[in-house]
Length: 362
Image (cartoon, rainbow, N blue to C red; front, side, top):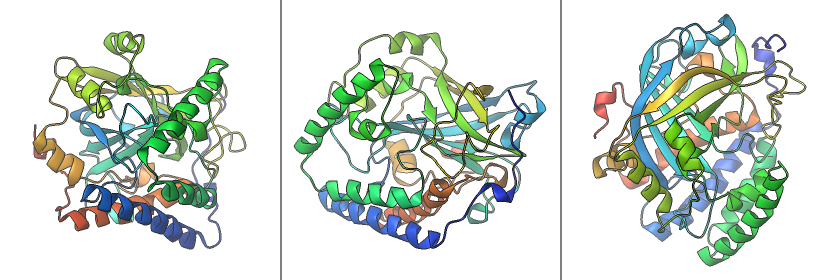
C-alpha cells in the first residue's frame, strides 16, 4: 500500500453558495417531515426514521496498531461504551415486508477525549452515522439537493406505489448483484432482503483520521452472524427487521470488526465526490478494533424514550480529529443538527446527550 495522504485544510474545496444549498436541502427534508408528522401524529427522523435496534455495548480499540492507524479515539488500546441504533434509511415508517431499503447503523461512542468540533464543545461523545452502501447516492450537495427534492416529493405517495417500485428495484438490483455490480440509486427502494446483522456498514463519506484521511467500515465478525447470513431471510411482519433484531439479541451476542480505509491517492479516492468508491486494491480496509454487542432487550420502552425519541446521532458530534470531510458531509453536519433539534422540539422531547453509559436505560 502507498503512503497515506496527510490531512490538511486544503483537502476540502468549499463551493460557492454552499450554505444556500445546505439550507435548501434542509427545507426540502423539512417539507417531507411535515407530511410524515401529519401522517403519524408526531415528528419522526427525516432520515433513518424507523429504528429496529437500540443497543449498548463496547468499542474495543486494538493493541499494536501501526502509527498511521493510531489516530484520534483509536490512538491507544482502550474500551469505550457505545450506544448503537439500527434503522432503515428513509424518513418514513414503511412496511418492511413491502418496501426494502438500505439500512443504517449509528454509533455513539461515549467518553472520548480531545478537542471537539465547535457545535459539540463540552461533550464527550463521538458519533458515526453509517449505511449499508459503500458510496453515497450523490457526489456532492448540489446533486443531492436534486435527489432529495425528488425523494421528498414521493413521500406523500401511497405505500402501495412504493411497494411496487421496491419489487422492481430489487429485481433489477439482484441482476446487477449477480455480476458483481450494485446501483446506489436502485438500492434505495430495492435493497436485498438481508438480516440487518449480517451486513457491512460504511461511513460513505471521508473523514479526518488524525493526521490522515479515511473511511470507516463495520463488518459482521462472529460465527453466529455468518451462519445467519447463510440462511434465507424475509421480514415476517410490518416491523420484521425489528422483530429479527430483537429476537436475535434476546439470547445471542453480535460482534463486528471495525476497519479503517486510509486515503492513499486523492485522485482515485476523492474527498469531495461521495459517490466514488475508494478502490480496496489501492488501500484495503485495516482492522482497528471490535464492536461488541451482548445479549439484551434491544427495543425496550424505556430505551425507545431515551434513544429512539430523545437522542440525536449527528455527524457534527465529533472530535476535531475525526471531522467529516467533503460537500455531502458538510451538508449532513448542518442538516442532522437542525432537523434533529426540530424533531425533538416539535415532540416536546428533552434532548439527551449522555456522558455515561449508565444514563442509557435497560
